Image 1: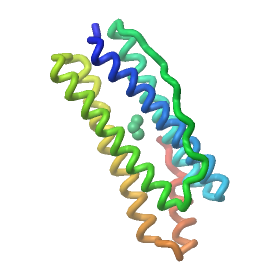
Image 2: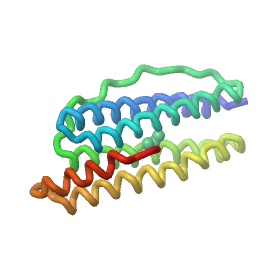
Image 3: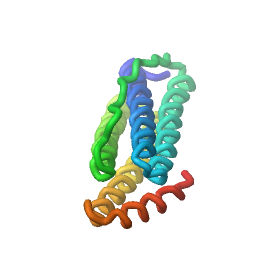
Image 4: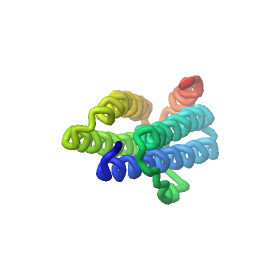
Length: 164
Ligand code: FEO
């Protein structure tokens, strides 16, 4: 049985993961409107991943006999500026999510909730990957700079091949 504290934090995490999904979908639509189909594809895959993260938390609450509370999701922005600005926002957002996951893990330790500790370990590893992926794209966009349109479209093409 989940403690009330863990249940509350996990319900907040569902909301955060579904907001992440909305944010990346909005970024995908924006990228497409800017003719960057590869960036749009990468962000759409990310949207699907975030939805699956939210579902993992939802299923964990259900499996542990807790109560799922779906909370309202804020509307994401519509415009995001340059691709560099957009991916800097992705990275900053992922850092916030990492802090939330760490906070959840800390709570699971305090509550001696061993099942949640094991469950959360997957997310701790996942966040390392999420931050590394976003940081790599930010670094590549910085290398390309503002002037190399060719470089930008080359990266767009490469990101268009993301599978999962
Ligand atoms: Fe679900 Fe990108 O963290």
